[in-house]
Image 1 (cartoon, rainbow, N blue to C red):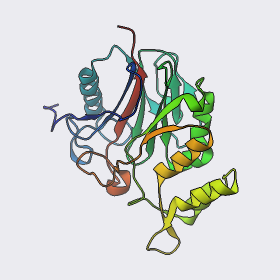
Image 2: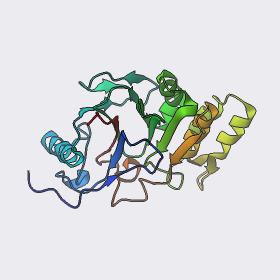
Image 3: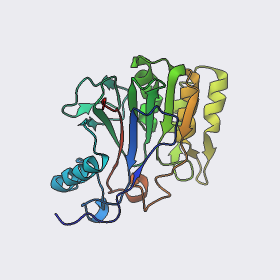
Image 4: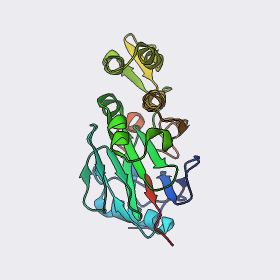
Length: 259
């Protein structure tokens, strides 16, 4: 399998989470994958050799040194969320949440927006895979509504994703969000998240801004992050829009077990 390539770097969210909440994002360096997947690809479904992906996951688990089990998703760009009582086989959903210590929730991204959530008391954690389809279908609202913690008592961090500087979409994407606006004021705010691009009928979409608008509308007050562009930083992040064939980062959150 060879030695890991590059330096392993794990990003820690800059947010006011309690000490018993663990959260991190993997970057590209420090893994065993090669070619388009170099080097710390964490996804089994993108064409990389499974034995290399498994080794990459083992490298990250060893670095984290957590007494925890990992719960992975089969993401479908929908609006379904799932509660995790015990880690097991992949779940088909785009949102996960747990109240059980010792479980690491894992969401894979390479442009879509990972949304980290935890309660101020550290007794609940959640993670959302938020692309434009999932967000317009209600994945944020559905996941947070299923959690026991009220939105006002949640802490949110928006992880690395493609930002407006490189995310060009069509009129259909813009209309998908304007059509679900609950109020004229929210519609106006959402419209400002789409700035005209050079090409006719195209817009630069700000996923992080859209997420903030939707989060604030349901009562979330503490929102951090949303400034790291996966497309811009090719050294640290995979980006499907930039590279087409590429690996995925793993976004992880959990409640530390006692002791």
